[in-house]
Length: 126
Image 1: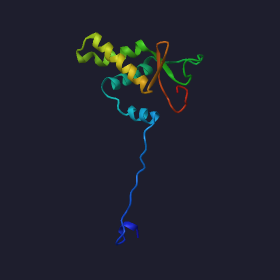
Image 2 (image 1 turned 60 degrees about the horizontal axis):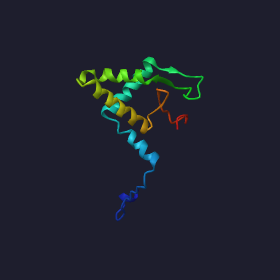
Image 3 (image 1 turned 30 degrees about the vertical axis):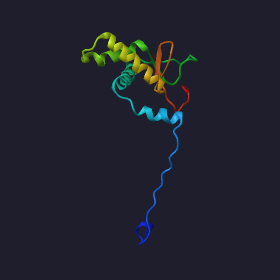
Image 4 (image 1 turned 30 degrees about the horizontal axis):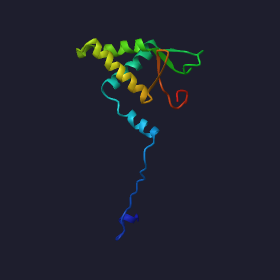
């Protein structure tokens, strides 16, 4: 018979809580994509699918991943914002903020105006 079902016994539940480290905080922030950050992420997925290439003979890019130019990524982003009826300058600023956010929160890496998603499991980008 379980302890909680015995007369005079109570079930005890415990949870260990500790301070979050920088890596834990970054991982938790990954779940907080929304708005233009989410639009930019989807635009990058599509740009990589449609125009991405693998750079196998370069020390600057992960060999197992597709990369794409930032311009191709921006064009995909623009297509998603076309119906929002916003000025070109506003779209460019929104893209720049989202691009920076994705890199700061360890979604993407860039080198020489080429972009790719980080894959933490292989450790090539960290």
